[in-house]
Image (cartoon, rainbow, N blue to C red; front, side, top):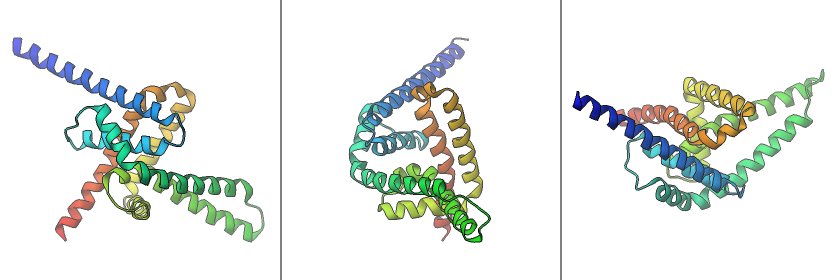
Length: 206
């Protein structure tokens, strides 16, 4: 009886401790996103922390680990943020300007832009997990994110569904972002990690 109570208390303590860690990470992420231009470095740092959690790696405090990752990835993620945001805006305006009509040329052009937008979305959902998983150039990060999204359609569909449902819920209850941002990152990296493990197994066999 006494041992059962100890085990229960231990599980409750671990749950509360992890809940506090998630909340603290979410607060750090929101605060560091406030300057707007630091959204990419802050999001990368958040994914870096949840990566360590998913992989069972020890961290020396959420605060210290977050800012260490923020600093280490700042330059690269700022470069990617400029390129990726500019491309996203360009594609957005293309979709707004190019309307499908009865013209064969406009249909072809709209179709091409739509496919590019789809690839942009595919890369985007893998972007931060790949950023914290692989140390390489920004070009290779984008290329790897695209390749992973294409060769693992099942996980990509799961991620798209998860992101879509989450975006819908947040559009109704935007205040939830104050509490669940880090949990969303954790779930996304957990799904992506299945892909990373599969790729690692294939490479080991070769």
